[in-house]
Image 1 (spheres, rainbow, N blue to C red):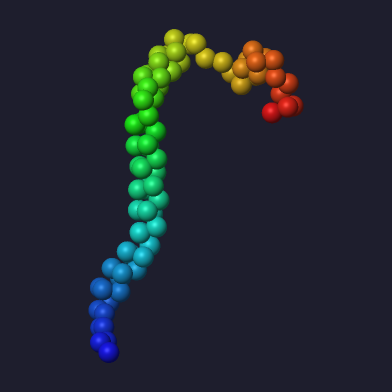
Image 2: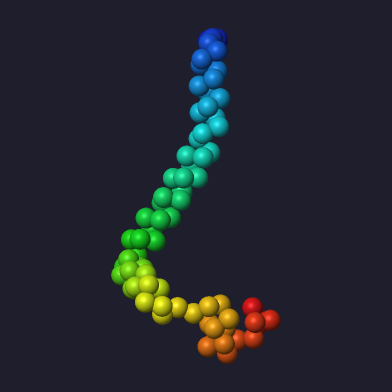
Length: 76
C-alpha cells in the first residue's frame, strides 16, 4: 500500500480545492443554462425589443398587467 505524505502547503491547497469545486460547478451550471437560453431562436431579438420597449416607456406595472388581463390580484 502506498502512503501519501502531504506538506502543509499541500493540505492548504487541497482544502482550497474542496471549497472551490462546488462554487465552480454551480457557476458552470449557470453558464450552461445561459447558453441554452441564448441559443434558442429569437431570444436575443426579443430581448433587444424588450429593452427598447422599456427605454421608451412601454411597460406595465404588476397591478396594470393584472387589470389588463382582468385578473383579481387575490387569485395570484
